[in-house]
Image (tube, rainbow, N blue to C red; front, side, top):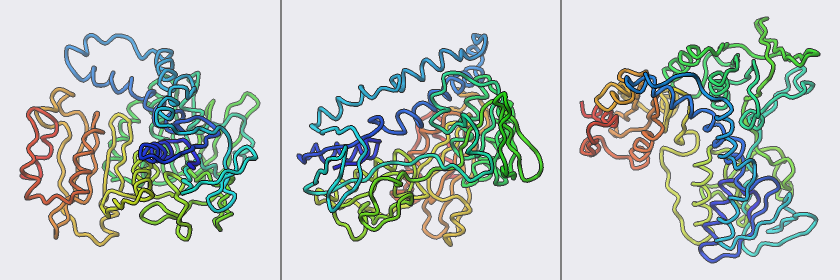
Amino acid sequence: MVIGAGPAGEVAAGRLAEKGLDVAIVEDRLVGGECSFWACMPSKALLRPYEALAELKRNPGAAEAVTGTLDVAAVLARRDEIVHDMSDDAQLPWLEDRGITLIRGHARLSGVRKVTVNDEEIEAKRAVFLTPGSGPLMPPIDGLDAVDGAWTNRDATIAKEIPESMVVMGGGVVGVEMSQAFQTLGCQVTLIEGARRLLPNEEEFACVELTEALREYGVEIRTGRKATKVEQAEDGMVTVHMDDGSTATGEKLLIALGRQPLTQDVGIEVVGLEPGKGVKVDAHMRVPGHDWLYALGDVNQRALFTHMGKYQARLAADHLLGHDHVLLHGADGPLSPRVVFTEPQVAAVGHTTETADKAGLIVDVITTSTSGNAGGSFYGRDAPGTVQWLVDRERKIIVGCTMTGAEIADFLHAATIAIVGEVPLSRLRHAIPAFPTRSEIWLKLDA
């Protein structure tokens, strides 16, 4: 039994079914989960048109062909296509082809290997995989619960219209991506972050470059300020009061202050766990003390990324099948590969200078320009962007990498491979990037 048909649940169910197990998956919303319908996919659909336009404008010849601005209606229509107009019909053949039984309804643990769905208790012979995902965190700010129509990521990513103005609370991934998306689609955005900088968990240079870009687009950014009160006027306008006495007003308010595991009503108290909290797991994603129960994806709070939920699903499914593929490496948990799909993009894997220092590592910092080579000419020479590697001075391996720049998300996998494989620089120097590609940034390590 798999509770939750998001990416982690689907991968686990598919892997087990392909090996001959009888698998049922339970979903009370849409098969495909948050990523497919309210997060990763629709948000990138809103961001990609401006990214493509920005690249065209950087390249002579193409730039002269660009006239007008983004067609907002067309952008939203394409977004609707990508989320299949909020229908999961396109997801179902994948389950059917693997013989997976889909049960529509809300599932709760009700005993050892027992799950109750729609008032019917079902017993799993082997195991239960818990993959309910996460939801937006709503902070206890005075007046927030009284706001009519406050948005979370679920509302913003599937919005049918672009408001004239919006206040975004939170300068993490959702906050900065949605700020750029809505600003470039015609909305005046004010972005508030309580920390002293945006993306506070990433390298400071990345934050600086992204902040400068967002300001160039017209986003008003206020960092180091925390919301203390929210008020809504009769005309629907929302005003956010901050701890320094300033205010920000917008037609819409977007709450992007983090995520919380959806364990309030999945029956985890049956196994002695606290509803509303994350579920701790071992290296195999199994809940300690319950060899039949696995918890995957956002619910275990190891790494709140779709790709890591899928990775965990493969580990857990294979463990149930009798295979142990667990590998301790430097790109898991908080060090997992991660991308912010703004313009410029921010991509990172492994340590930052701050986390490396906390881990007691002595690192050499090596930097170069993302586009300062021949390959970069075709994306717009000297377009803003930086690559920073952290090299463990003792072991001579890469332990962290942060990149900024235009369309650099796909650069990240090479760094992830180097970190997971602990490839020595002496060997990495023989992995020669093709010319003329921007991958020549890796030659900097052999300088």
